[in-house]
Image (cartoon, rainbow, N blue to C red; front, side, top):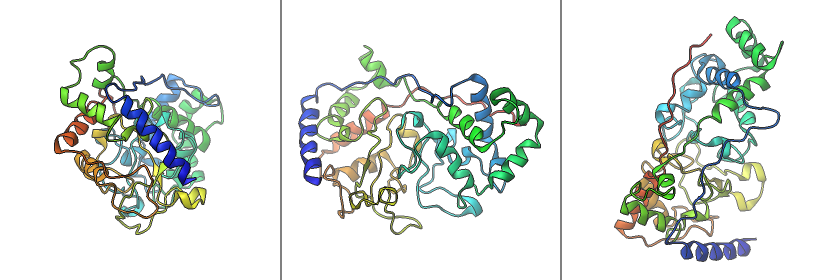
Length: 330
């Protein structure tokens, strides 16, 4: 298996090098919604209310937006997020931006959809620590929510599954697009600086970033052990292995998307890299922990200017501002 991956790596590096003078550009597509959770304006509005409502937590002070704050790149700005009882958790809060495009959710991929993911933190003891039955009782006591659930889902429709569907619908509206990178490939060659264009060519060539960060939102939705050092309360985090039970996945985590990545520092699954410059330095040295390291991760030999150019390209992936007006809650 590992020999196969190395062979694929060689092929992809050759391909990306051949394309080093121009990007393999893919426009961000229209968001798709599941057949059993079709979009409506009313459902998205209900999901927005629930997303910002701290009553979804057992303490009544943690909302989805506490850890996925629009003002902090739809993360929380912390290396590792703070959960119920002000306890530090083991991983960095991933951004919600473009999560509707991801094939799986969470750093270890244990949630297969946004609907499934929306329920997880609500009941997790260390996160929002809310009992589902208690949550339903609380929301049913609020006529404003009863009216909106009835309008969106029908009578007697206030269930945890419908709560999750509404939240997921709202999260699918959080999309980063029309970045300088998109404008550049739409014909405005002034949209990206000379440094950013050089960084783009490095990204798809010498720096090998596109091996894992590819497609319209710059993720392969795969899992890789990139050699991140331990930090925080988890001295050992096996990542994807906890789900797959495959030795190959020990220490592997999901590839994050890179659009609007400048907004969601710090970086890595446990927040060990504070800035994008630090991230580039990390990859240039070939990671920090060599045990079970992906064959994709090797020293890059980048110059100081090349590192600056890569950062400029990542900045050029920032989409237009996602405006959010805090909803009036029932």
